[in-house]
Length: 408
Ligand SMILES: Nc1ncnc2c1ncn2[C@@H]1O[C@H](COP(=O)(O)OP(=O)(O)OP(=O)(O)O)[C@@H](O)[C@H]1O
Ligand SMILES: [Mg+2]
Image 1 (cartoon, rainbow, N blue to C red):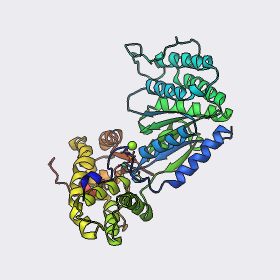
Image 2: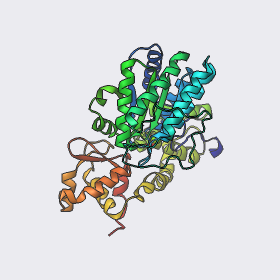
Image 3: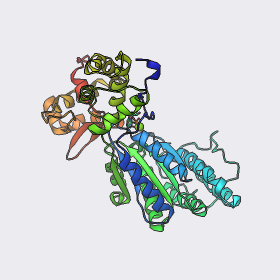
Image 4: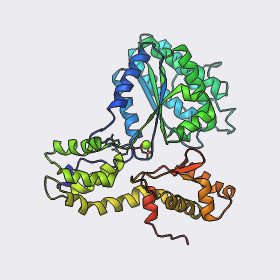
């Protein structure tokens, strides 16, 4: 059918034509926003899930929800080896600019911006990294920086002061501030620890500022490694693959708007191929649409299109990640894939004990730590429970099992 009218959107953070299966999260967030703006106690939120399950898309949708309630919002994508100061300053600047038109005292906004600038220009004394923050970079704030607030150089102290001041601007206008942090597992331990401390402090004073983080499944472990109370500080939401009804809705609703329908059996075949993972739902949906000669779409249309979707996934989704691994890391992942071959009747990759990987390779577990740690840092695998590792990418094990061992 007409590829120009193809509604499906496989991509990173790409808004799907139909946001399926997330009603629970959306209505929960509505309650959070309402409670926080009324000064009720609430916890910040953490969304966790595998690659391509729709964390970024959900984060963006929650942000729109906050904006529509006239909250100030800002978003950060954490990167390994990058301090939080600059991106956080930019995000808060954005949030306060959104609030400014509703504020009756422009001086208060300027006072806050002066603190924000002082925070932004300060290097981190505690991070173990000396960044040359004064070189060329300017936060784009016209007021001069203050001194003596949020500029101690200790990120923990500074964050508490900065976020409290930001929250009090939001209190003035009767709403709140929501900070969205994507790829949160990549934040440095110093920054994670400081952010937890700031959230802890703010939650005690009922300040209307919340953090909504998103990251890989081991993010809760990263947070509790930084502060033991983080388990009580955040509310964790696991973002998972779509159930059958939601996956069908993700495919059928956009098609209906184009007056196209699916035969039930076509939806069976599509669900079997995608396993309900949102990225795969979009990828198979897109290929199927392009191949199908007419509506309704039949199971054979899906079968004819599937190899196209798979080869695109093999290059873009799996291959690009596999390429990032060194030969030793690839060997590690191949053994993982072999050992995670499941007889559990589902398509979900199982976690593999690291000891078993060492045994299979006939190596000492310690000698494999560098490969494992590098793979974690590259975001390809994560540590599960009780000494296990698992792939962050759904269906990655299946992909690896079909790859020839080109590294000898
Ligand atoms: N609820 C949903 N219904 C239908 N499609 C969705 C849904 N959520 C996400 N998608 C689609 O899935 C794809 C992946 O979404 P997204 O980039 O948000 O995933 P992610 O979890 O952030 O992945 P990563 O961990 O790689 O950043 C996008 O193409 C998006 O359109
Ligand atoms: Mg994402």
